[in-house]
Image 1 (cartoon, rainbow over the protein chains, first blue to last red):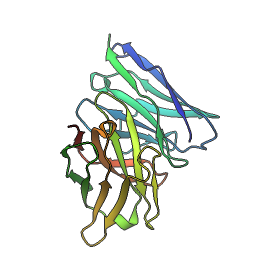
Image 2: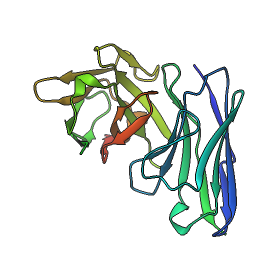
Image 3: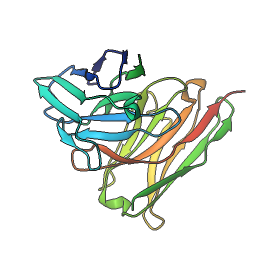
Image 4: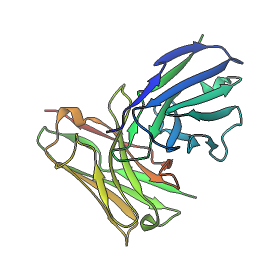
Length: 107
Length: 117
């Protein structure tokens, strides 16, 4: 199975901060990497697909990038609505696997 | 508008069975891959099972041999039949639709399964 190692597991930040969350794949997954946002009691929401493609309706302060097997989600200018948990997921091969999640809390 | 509505969750004893349903609207199930994803209380997301547009199926090792994914094309409904349930299967179960790179672009609201005596 492909392992997805996500870091950090949690972080505290302030409105306006620039955040970076990292996900490392245990093997080559091309660009089959997606990012989701989840708020308490709600279903996950797709933010970025294929490593760097912004899903429709998602604010442009979210961006994704890749270098080899290391994928990065960046939030440029954190907004109050962005405090949530973020997950990466590889869809290169089944079983599809998620990272452990990053909880973004208010400092 | 794409909508996914899960049902069938509830309390079941260890060793019991349950069938979850996911009624899809706004698109045709056979045109897309679909997945079941679960989330145990306070934990992360775990992909459980998937079915391709052509009907091929796949499962996580944790449920292989116990869960069966299927769909009813006439009712545009996705199912997962769960048997030999264990306490560790307790979770909110989501159905989700896949798109081009198999990303999960639409999710249901989830249904809670609790396995307990």
